[in-house]
Image 1 (tube, rainbow, N blue to C red):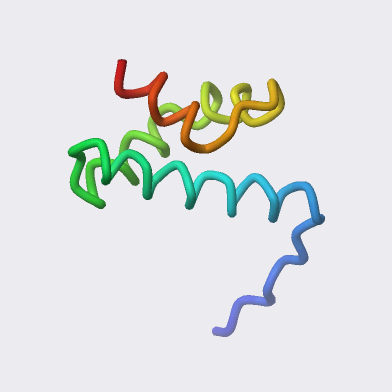
Image 2 (cartoon, helix red, strand yellow; image 1 turned 180 degrees about the horizontal axis):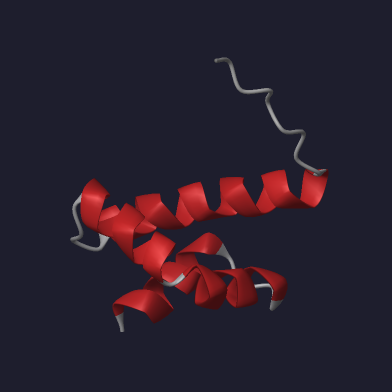
Length: 66
């Protein structure tokens, strides 16, 4: 059974792309890609807050790694 693709609003797409960038900075900071993805998924509310607070992906990754 094929799932109908849900349409995401532009803000949701921006958040997803932002999280993808954060993931890259977490990997550069020493996490594996799997660890970075799991951390973002587990802390999605915190990362969403950082997004809306205007942090760059790099700043959010630094905060997460601190």
